[in-house]
Length: 137
Image (cartoon, helix red, strand yellow):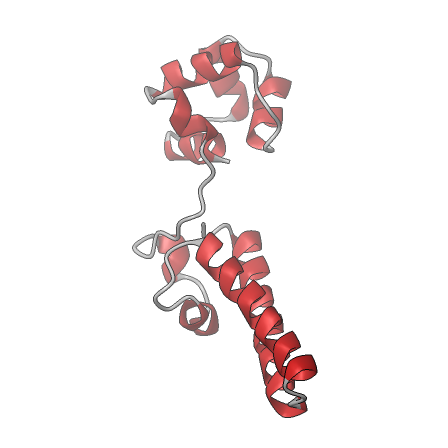
């Protein structure tokens, strides 16, 4: 969640952020874990971070390929996302590969091509989930 990234950027603990915002530490923990926050909570956080409320509610789905986190990723992941800037595009690619694999298998009766497309779908999915775990988005 963006709140955790902003907090980490300022080198603040959850307790310190809660104190600055006048919130409960548990509220900060819930917001950072992706749970919905009240408008008052968002206003408090936005004020402390000096950002718009919309910045706190947007989901980060774009890869920052200039960040240190990205540069530390294994070569195969960077290769898998070559030319891809967002998670959404990669998910569309995964879905498309699956659909083409099913078409190849059932409509064209081409088992070898279908197998290749299914393997590509699998590896694309692995790369996406690995990226989620490593928070590259």
